[in-house]
Length: 118
Length: 113
Image (cartoon, chains in turn yellow, blue):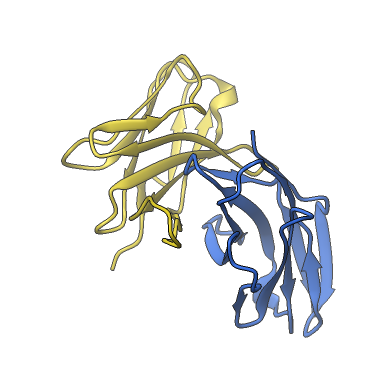
């Protein structure tokens, strides 16, 4: 069973360009989360999506950032007009369940995309 | 808002010895989960162990165990018989009603041969 796939693993963009990060969840998983990790920091939640729905985007910057998880294909995190402060590792995670009563909420992480803005 | 605090930026342990990593959290929720993730130099996030708040019994996974003190909001990780491959960043994380994971800033563990 393939794990969470992210591509590209490394992405270099010049200031002002667009960055598109892709995430394919584990087979059977319909919940996708995006996290950002700045140098020497823990991961910070950005957005939580289910197929065709944004459930929680409370961690997303108000401008330039957007995310989608279409019915078919991977989830996309899009950063427009990148700035140097966007340089970070972006992790995607997926899970299979949301519920109570002892159901696991384990999130399985992809290898991350390291974005460098020059 | 929930917060997770890891007060030890760095720890070191001798190979085959035992080390404990500390984590405290703040929440007003009664139903939640706690996790320890390992991040080796490859940067892959690997789930080490999880604990459901409603369970009083401490979780154990081979050489890894936790000391979950719900009243004190403490969730420490004990690594027994440390191995060189245990060297990594360790992150404590909380998941409550909002589904998202809240991470601490991490503890860098060095294992000395």
